[in-house]
Image (cartoon, rainbow, N blue to C red; front, side, top):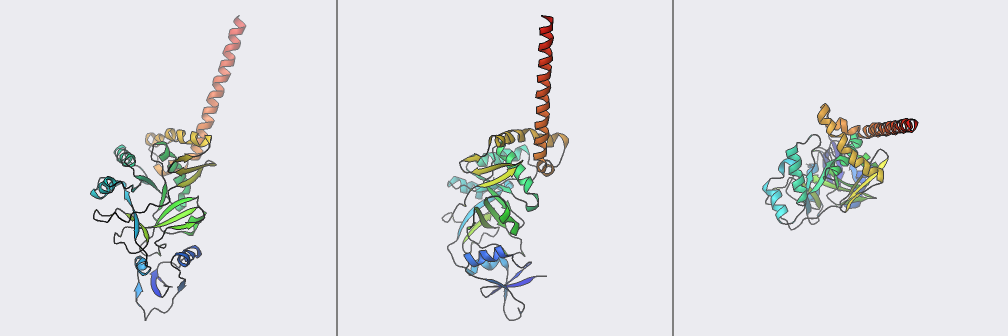
Length: 300
């Protein structure tokens, strides 16, 4: 059952009444309030996707592509014109061929974008660490499940929000809240008004109004903070150790046929076990060296 809301005199049918944060965004960026409407018999009801059409502002956009569209003419056209599009990293497994294709796109200037699942934020941190180790360090997080008020409690950085068809999307603007940046994503290539991220845009789109988002994302794993910026990744010495060790942990997924998300979500505990194993091994080597030296001294 849909909820009818009144946005600056526009009646919109949405699945849920927006939370306070989303209402604040509409107040700040569209200069309008959101109120619940109970009588909708006299006015035409608009879809949530039509909202940007009612708030005029020069249209600007940034393209992002799924990994299966990296060989499309649209992607090649953007790269040839010196534009750096985003490339969404696969959420689970990706084959060696996929990796080579994505790595080539990144070397040509594409910007890695990683899926962010609100219920599996630890999974994102693990995947981001591993992606950094293999040269696909993410600079943006992609939330495919729509706006969630809990996003504002996530680490600092840029988040691209793709709303569901029956959900109220965020304003088509570059939204900043403290150290977080939010951008509306859509597959609709007919630009309306304001700033939007276009997923898999067609080849015939104009390239005169490209605008890059604020790039950068941070995460925390095993009590270690990582900050990915266009200049590189900033972390502690233990963070660099985790990056290196991730290349050891993840290949175990292929050996033991574990599910990629499951292994990544336990990456922190895996590092603990590996660290303990390495520590015990070094301790054993030390004990054996001491015993061997004592035997040599006893013979002498």
